[in-house]
Image 1 (tube, one colour):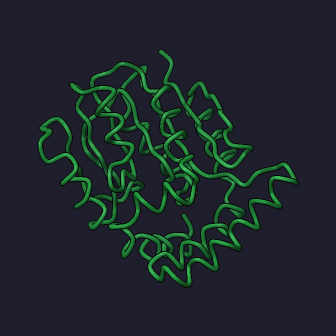
Image 2: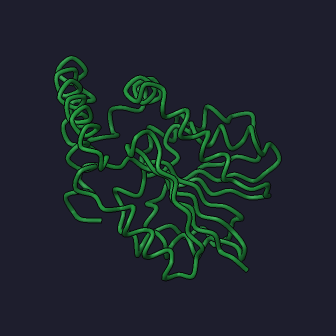
Length: 226
């Protein structure tokens, strides 16, 4: 992760926790819900899940509904997001949360499956995959999801126009202004999909790729085949 990319994290998330769930649903035209459903399809029946960059717990909650008896640990670096996630799961003893940097994570335990939505573009693939492998059981699975810049030229036109509109909307939602300005630049510049695929294969994982929503989003799955 470059220093400039690291600096985006507090700018994006320190003041957006209370409105995150609503904004991510509206700005993706509810596609965020669809993408998370696709992530869920890839999660096997298992006993333990590590959800990196869990945020307010949107994906964590869906995992808990699918695997109500599984041990689930959510990790995030932003305190305000974790506060919301903890309230969401106040009555569930099998779900816990840890404040740590995903690239420096050390829980001293392994999981059957590791998931994450929207973290790859912020991270160094060598570092993050290495961390995941240290926390992954033999036969386990890593599932990473994030935005991608569409390759289709026609789709790119609408994609770029949409972020122009969001840029304007940002003037009326100050806490989200930096996100709407900087996020499209980050999505255009990141090569997370190809880089993570290469690193996963170098670690001996069987890799599967699913492109979604006209190339605007993708799920990369790495299976630690026995």
